[in-house]
Length: 394
Image (cartoon, rainbow, N blue to C red; front, side, top):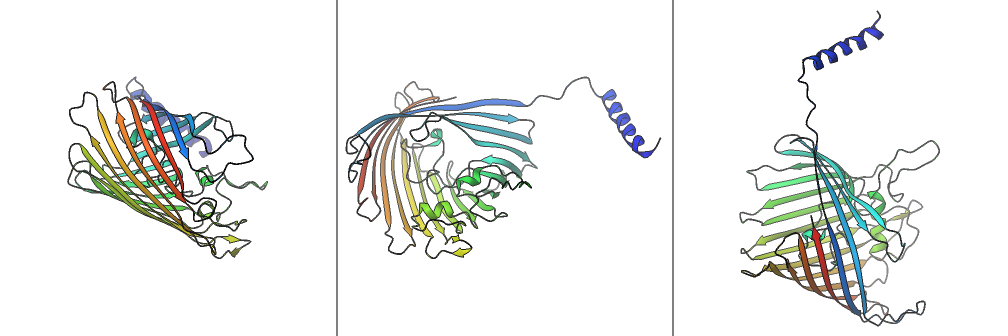
């Protein structure tokens, strides 16, 4: 018998001996927990839009009434105390642009607790930027915010992170390496380039080896449910989407500018009933390139802030809380002659659990939004929206 057959034969003997002496039972199966939510909102809104659009048959000056819906279903998997995973799928009905229902895998990751302090996570996940929750079960108000993941919080990311958390240490945090933060194409999975000329799925408007880098640090205050959080994200060529979003008037960029986000947020549980939260954030985007040449003044900046107070009414017959929130954004393109765009938003929300069940909420929200991009087309556009939300979580 030569070595080619001896080594496999020895392996078979070892494996056989192991199972012969093992107890006659299978290892415990992974535990899977299903959860999610169903969210339906009715909006009643008015806006002083500058003029009717002659390309449509409707009158844009009139009030609008409509419903929106979004749902989530999650599977949390526990293989052992050290190995866990999660899949989070958002389901959205057809929208008015594509008329296609959307199935969006917001999260699909696994985590390995190396020890009691360090955890490694890899896959797709909602980034850790900002205070406002991307899911309605974590919001203190109903209406879609100016800031948040719909703004410069970035996209869902694909990558890996290393997190630190020690039971007796007030500081916790994580470092992230991802495909990118600010271009939606970077939230796609990367495939190897092929000899047939196929490119990977990352944004074409960045270098092949570019990655995004993030830092998330939290300091837990001595008071329960109170903390201060620092967010940092850097993308060396992840800014082309942001270049346009910030008002770049130069089309044809084929390489995005560098994008740097720095934010500070936190909350204080001032009393048993009163929660106060705040956030400030700055986003700086450098000039992009076209044909390998830097396009001067194609970058820009965005600064934003938020303050919120939520008060739970004591001794109410059913759980009720009231939220007051103020948000502001200031955006400036470096393009010649560009005006500074400003937006503010004030919100009052009443959040209730009318059946005393924390699984069902009926929420009400009144929001005033003011937008002014400094041009004649959109000077001081004001919108008033009344929202009623039915939210079922499970």
